[in-house]
Amino acid sequence: MNRIDGVICDLDGTLVESEDLHLLAWNELVIRAGHQPPSPNWNDDCIGLPDTYAAEKTIGYFPDMGDAEKVNADKQIIYRELVANKGRALAYPGLYDMLKRVRDAGIPLAVGTNSVLANTKAALEAAGLAEFFPIAVTLDQVENGKPAPDIYFEAAKRLGIPPERCAVLEDSTAGLAAARAAGCLVLGLTTTWPADKLTDADHIFTSTADALGWVLAQREANAVPR
Image (cartoon, rainbow, N blue to C red; front, side, top):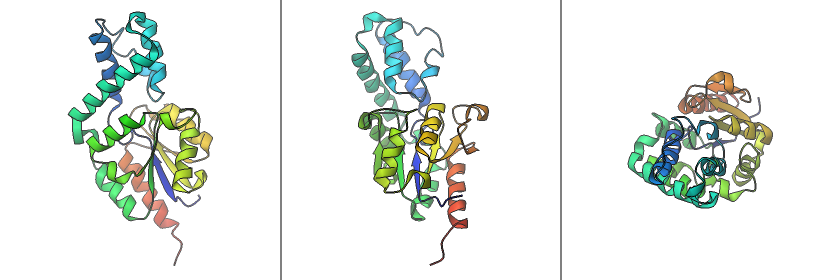
C-alpha cells in the first residue's frame, strides 16, 4: 500500500452528524410553504448528492414554491439554523481527539463536500472542528459535484499531494464513487448506508474515528526512518 500523506474528509455523515438535518431542512421548507412532505423518507435518494437534485425534486412536487434556485437558497438558510442549534453535538463522538492526533502526526487534512461553502463553514464551526480544516473544497468551487471526481482532485491539489497518496473518508455512495474516480484510497463509513452499499470502498469502518485510527496505524507502519 502506498504511503498515506494526506486525508480528505467528506462533511455530512463523516465529520458531522447532519444528514438528518438536511432532510429536516427540506421538510421544514415544505411545511413553511404550506405543504406536507410527500412521505417521511421522500428525499433519502438525494443523500450525498448536490442540493440542486433535491431542489428540482421539491418543485416537482410543489411547483408553487418557486424556481429551483430560490428553493435551494431558502433551504440553506433553514439548514444553517438547525446546525447552529445543534452546536458541538454535531461532531461524531471521539472525533475531535482523533483529528488532533492526525494533525499532530503531521498528516494534513482537508474537507471535500457537496455542501456549499457557507454551510460547510457553519457546520465545522458549530461542531468545533474548523481548526483542523484550513482547506475546504465545496460544491460551489468546482464545475461538477460528486459523484464526479472534481472535488477530490481539487482537494488533493490544494494539499499538494497526489490523489493516490490521499485517503478519502466517505459515507455516501456518490462520494465513494467520486473518490474512486479521483484515484484516492477510499475508506467507506457505515454511518449512513450499510456496508453492502459501499461497493467503491477499499476498506470499510463503522466510524470516522476508527478510520482515522487505521490511517495513523498505516502511517506508522510505513514510516520512513530519518
